[in-house]
Structures are given as structure tokens and as C-alpha cells.
Picture 1 (cartoon, each protein chain N blue to C red):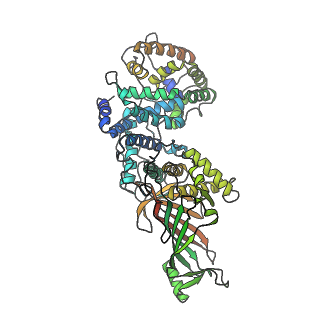
Picture 2 (cartoon, rainbow over the protein chains, first blue to last red):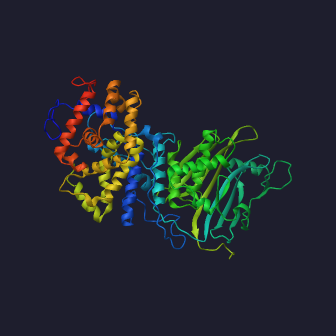
Length: 439
Length: 190
């Protein structure tokens, strides 16, 4: 045998046994699909820095997301470079080509990269649509994700990660923004049994928070009850049977009417935030965070995970440190809060998405619409028997549109009833406006 | 190697996203090489970094000196050099552990690794660890990345005669470690 230039290796037997042994010892593993997607996004971010423009079909999009351009003077450029995301858990699903002992065709890697590109492009451009790959050596098993994809398939997990990483990339490319207030406008609907447990009501509440950035400025909350109605058709039948009441006592049967819910929407109620809310930019894991606390949240994925783990074990439910499942749930909820509505830098927000992408059990449920009619991709991040929680995220903007949960409740007759709840993040960002009627 | 690789670099001065085509072409190659040296965990980062670095210094690419692919492997090798300890740790682990554990590349790699007798594995890993860094670079660019003399010379920016002499020296050591003329190696599927 000769070397690759056609010359014999002088003084050595004409074979590659020793070189093959080296390759056999060290291996040369294929990258996982996520590694390919992630690395490509990193390169595109670098290319985008160079042009300040839209690059490629998977790059940060030109239309800025919800956190961009809200405040005046977005001077600070977003920090785009991210730490690599360790995605060990998905490595087992990584596509591999056959005949690995042989020298590989260079095209095998290209096919894989193309599959990843197509996957992300399809997730962004045609949510829920079938994804096919065409490159030589491209795997047949990972790139398929029909619209009604079973939520438990590894394709569902792979797509969830692709959506979350696309969202992270979109967020990372956005300016940090600033303003006098961090304003969050949310609408929440939730189902709850009436006080006597006869049927289930659905209640609505609109909530606006104006969190003052400057010390001395006051922070405000504006709440508006959106009314209540029977949750489902069978609840409505039970409601009619009960005489079609227009208000309900939500306290236990026979208790004084302290907690009354009206069917009619109420008036907005403005209240100044006091106590621990003073000088706070939001709460996380049941703890209010000062602006300094928020600024100190680590921006890399590993740092963020460590920070949140510490936070939820300190302040979370008792025993969370010893219960991996509980800890994972709390960690997921905290990451979702950061991704959705806390005043953090784009880098931290992007890392929250990337952290979610590393969590075991995340899976995609395809295209979904929130209660405000906005379309996005549903990503389940928690599913532990009693509680299932998912976010609806727009991977093009990195915007979290809504958080939706289903909790199993025990009915009067001992059966289980699923109770749905949704918070739609209607408008999140910095503003220099003033709260209505305040100076 | 593809004829239009250099044209893509040229094009990237006007249209940066042309550079992403090179990523799609060569990321798999670069990744397998880097992962073979420092393991998948570090490779996830280093392989991606290779292309970011390459983009940043694409002015240094000289089409008269060779191909884009070899140039990329040179950059990857420089990044590996900044992670020597990862490589050393990995070789040390391969020297000590039984065939099942050393590689992290999945089923095919484990099958491949079993083709090496356990004793040969240990001796080979120990020999790789003992090699001077610049000898190991030459060897692994040939064994893992399939570069030829000229490409290795371009990647490492050394004369191709030096590549040949280093490779011969290294291969003699390897064959000795593997048991001379009768290395304890099973058949490959070539």
C-alpha cells in the first residue's frame, strides 16, 4: 500500500494497520444534531456581527423581538457569543452513518449539517410541517417530525431543542434595551372548582406591572378581573341546574362569603407596590429580586443552572434538594420565568432557553395558538403525573407567548378532573411611558 | 477538496453568509477529528469555535498554498493545542480503562475498539501520550483526518519533508508498541 500521495511509506510495511489502530482506539464520533445546529448558529452570530444584518435563513431575524426598541437609547450591543450547551442526554439519539471503520466520505458530514439546517429552517418557517433531509448520509430517523408527532418520540425532543435553540439565537441578537419601567402585561385564565365543588369555573385576570428602574420611583400594579364563567359545556349544565348564579362564593361550603367571584368583568384597580416589591425588578422562586440581583444573574448556561439550582433549593419547597424530580421542576419553572418576563439581558434570556434545551423530558407538541390568538410552537418542559406545563414560544423572535398548565385535581366523587390554566405574555419590555394616571 | 471552496472565502468578503457553506461542508470532518483527540464534550465547543476563528482570520487563507479543508484542520489543531490537558487526560483514561469505556462515540466505535486487544490498546494509548505534541499532530491529521503529506504540511505550516520524517518516526514507534510485525490488531472491514 502507498500513502495518500501514491508514495510508499519508506521503510515501513505497506499497510495502514497502525493508523487504523490509532483510529480504532480514539474513535471519531459523529456530532449530535444539536451540536451541528448549535455550532452553525454560533458561526451565523459571528457573521451577523460583521454585517449587522440578517444572515442566512437561520440567523437572527431582522424584525426585532419584544425586548427590542421599547426603551430609548438602546446603546449597549447585545452580547451574542454563548457558552456551548452540553447536550449529553440527546447524544444517544445522534445520527450516525454506517461503516464507520472505513474512511468516511466528506459528504456524510455535509449531509448531516444540511439536515440540521433544514430542521431549523423548517421549524422556523413552517412550524409543525414535515421535515425531510436530502443529503447523503443524512439520517432517516431524526429528521422526521410529522405535524401530529407523538409527544414522546425522540423526534419530539429533538425538535423541542431545535425550537429552543432557535429562540435563544433570536433573543441573543437583540439589543438590551432600557427605560424608566420594566412593564409586563399579562392575561391569565385559570379553572377552579366552585366552593361547593359542584362544577368548574374559568376565571380571567389582566395584570400590568410597572417596575420602576430608578430608586425613588414608585412601582405599580394594575389588576383587572375579566369575570368568570363555567369552564366546559358540562360545567355550564351544572351551573344552570344550580340556578345560573352570577357570582360565586369560592370559599368552602358554609364559610362566610369572603372570597366572591363575579361573572361580570371588573374595573381596573391600581395599587402601589410596597414591601419587598420596593426596588425590585421581579420575583423568582418566590423571592423578590433587586435590580442588582437581576444584573448579577450569570449569563452562561452552566452558571445560570448553578445559580437557579441554588436559588430554588434555598427558597423552594422543602426537600427539593433531595428530590431530583422536584428540583428539575423548580429549575424548569425558574428558567421559563427568565425566558418569559424578567428584566434580564438578552444573553441571560438566551441562556434560559438553552438551559431548557438541556433539560431531560422537554418535547415539542407542534404548532399552538395562545388565548390571544398568537401562533407559536408548544414546548412541554414539565410533565410529572399531576402537572403538565408547556410554553408557547415563537422561535423567530424568541418571544415566549404563553405558559399553559394542566393540573389534575381530585373531584368531589374522588375522580380526577384536569384543570387548565394559561398566562399569555401580552407585552413585555422596557418603557419610558408613565403608568396610567401616575406621574 | 472542492474547487469552489476558495471562491466561497472570497465571496464571504462581500456576503459573509457564504462562509456558512464551508461549515455545512466540513463541520462533520472537523468534529470527528477534534472529538477523536479531545473527546466529544470539549469537541462540541472546539469544532464550532474552529469555524468562528477561521472566519475571523480568513484573510490569512492563501489559495496558492493549498485547500480550505487543510487550512481548517490547521486551525482546529491550534485549538486542540490550547486543550492539551483534555487530550492528555483522555489518552491516560484510554490507557487505563477496558475496551468498553474509552471511546464515547457510540456503538460503532466500541465495536472498533474491541478489535484492538486490551493490552495493545493500553500500549498504543501510552505511546500516543508520550509522543511530542508536534509528532502527535502529524500522526492524527493523517490517521483521523485523512490528510496527505502536502495537506498536513499546509495545515501545520511546515515543509512536507518534515511531515514525512516525523510520520515515519512515529509510525515506527507505534508498530513497536503494537508488537512489531505481528500487531495485536483484528481485521478491519476494509
